[in-house]
Length: 308
Ligand SMILES: CC(C)(COP(=O)(O)OP(=O)(O)OC[C@H]1O[C@@H](n2cnc3c(N)ncnc32)[C@H](O)[C@@H]1OP(=O)(O)O)[C@@H](O)C(=O)NCCC(=O)NCCS
Image (cartoon, protein in one colour):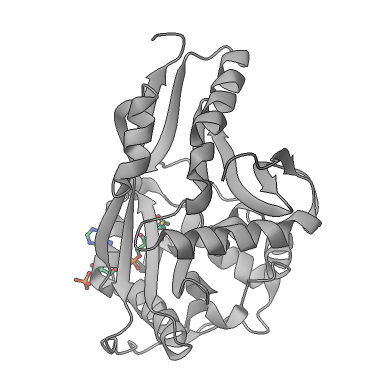
């Protein structure tokens, strides 16, 4: 679409949330069967708990519609997504990002791309980028088939987060994310508080009936799996999933995820998706156990700037 006037600016506050969620939903739907950088659930999770403040999210707008988005997870790393009918924005978007990396005195720049997106990769290669480190793995499950039953072990029950106490819900998150020793991060500590949960609840696409928990008879919340439904794409995404370290490898995560999948299946969604770091073997095993199949991999595409 040549000669469009594009306005480039950062996310300023909650009035930008709707257009950004709309972008994520459209890019997810319109890029199918390819992967997209952000599902609306990923946006809601990344910007929580305060949607009404500026965020380091660059939006490329045309006539009020968000056409492309960039985020820098690190000063020299870029995540990006573009609507399919605006893909021609890619070179300019990357040129601007490269300038900001150089301004930060960094020479090596990496852009995340999914291996399934051969067109995007060819464009990156044409701009001088080469395949670098692996980053993530993406799983999907087809909801056309009935999901296998998972018997609930004695002493536990599956529930959702309707009317949950925010402090207890936040503790469940911390109990999972405070122990990442299995993936080589023994010092990881989560800051997720009741206020974070209260903030998350204000996201228009947060649905407590899809925030599934496994609770022990003594009231301890053991698993928490937040599923986000997107009707337009027919895809539900999990972000995040975590289980109390003392209760892992008992199939309890599988139980919670299958319950969420059953609920989105009943609503007519077609696919479940979840992603994780390429080295997160416990998550990879758990998702495979649920019935998810690996369908894509994220990788950093790297360039030394200033070198032709
Ligand atoms: C990833 C995580 C949620 C998995 O939880 P879990 O309760 O152990 O998962 P489950 O027991 O339901 O796992 C289902 C299957 O995976 C297997 N599995 C789980 N962890 C495993 C491991 N470390 N090694 C081998 N197999 C493993 C289980 O044995 C089970 O196998 P089965 O289907 O043959 O019975 C948990 O390790 C966790 O909270 N990690 C920290 C947070 C995190 O990394 N979350 C995911 C980020 S995307």
